[in-house]
Length: 373
Ligand code: KG4
Ligand code: ZN
Image (spheres, rainbow, N blue to C red):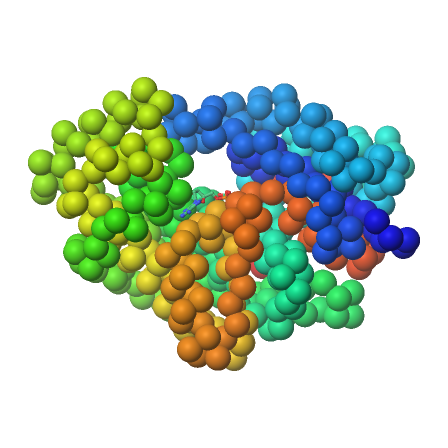
């Protein structure tokens, strides 16, 4: 740590990750601790809000303590506490928010409220900084996760400090988020929860051209998404192919025994299933890619930022990194660890707001549907 660096403690508890991080000057990650609750929610096939709140309560104190220890600082060194106050599960948000508020007050330090979605945008900048790159603005940012699939036009708002951005929403999903589609398809194919990582792994072994899914027909905004149709199409495909049922059951049994590695599940998947998985993934990725490229062109941007849990997807990364540069667009992804929910991104977003003079008080509230724009 050098002199005059601002140290922000970030706290995140909007969904099923309890996370805390210390970031210097919104760029240098001194620590990032993420306690995932996946093992708790797995047997229910999705996040159970009540269990999430209870787990956050159990983990928040040790997670913050660990973040401070790993950063080799003491709480008194922190210049501000940045905490996610939405969007997300209200009960889950309240745990981090209440803890953050109390901590800021006890330390006599400023409190900054952060929108979780803005955190995902800043995750891209954190990663770019590590790689010695600097994304040029304006950009189009695709946030694609279990809860969100949104396109933003991101502009610099330099009057408020170097990392202060302004946002306009270009489009969003009309039904399921892309990550939700991954999770639902994985569930119906007996691949467990969460669906993204396992579908990603198995798709590599299938033929993505094997099953044709029709593009969602949508009127209105050309930059909106829809993923419930493809989930239903996968369901109908399985119904039309009852021979797939026994292997689905076999995979469910395997997972119930705790045998859920990609190798174990691949061994229980026929070529037809692997083809279906690969085709599903190709369809989702094509959809995300084509709309993002079209939006970037329409808004005259040369930079594409992709963030959120689904940004960890290998096919999505490959497709964007292949197609963006062909059109003269620079493409930026966070590392996998920074793609999924974490608190380093909250500290980075909080830093920009802290420098811009934003301060929250004890009335800061948790907002389930807090918009970014
Ligand atoms: O950002 P995130 O950690 O939490 C939310 O804010 O939702 O995203 C979690 C979502 C889950 O739906 C998960 O299945 C998906 O991200 N995901 C993936 C991959 N890794 C996680 N989806 C596709 N491919 C992956 N490799
Ligand atoms: Zn998220």
